[in-house]
Length: 229
Image (cartoon, rainbow, N blue to C red):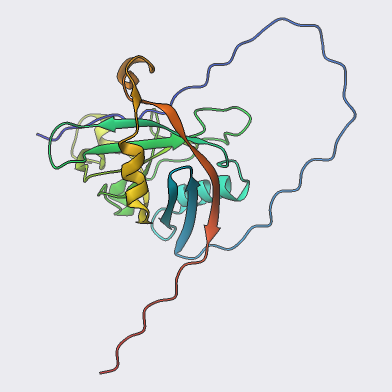
């Protein structure tokens, strides 16, 4: 029987308080968006954390919606200063087994609109060790939070034959780690709080979280030369 676990992004808590109407500030010109840089079939991105650098390749060819969404956060520098905040450890199968999770945790000042869901049955990108996968609640609610897998987790893949809508959809995989799995493992092995987190997340929250300093596009290395016959 397949084991399936939810990748849950933390919801934002918005506190509404009654206050006098604020004074109108002088109008400021809207910030100019960054110049769009064309994307090829693959986009390489470096995440510099306090524990080291993780380089990933995003599969724009097969998961264009998810990749373009991720790169938009990168180009707007909205991922700078985010945290790896969650580790889900599974005590079965080959170890280490589970995920690490990062993102903006619903920060209303940084989160963009949700994106359409790209299931693995459509993209062909399966949940293997090192895969990047979008966190979400219902399909079509993913925004900025994502996970990196420490192990193969086929239960995250879409299952079109299932009668359960959640299992039919699975999660959206969109890239893989190409350098820095040792850093991923360091994050996985970092201390967890026994009390922080709500529901399924209790006991899975990093304490302290691992800070991501910068996230930037980087050039892909040139292809290896083909040996002469």
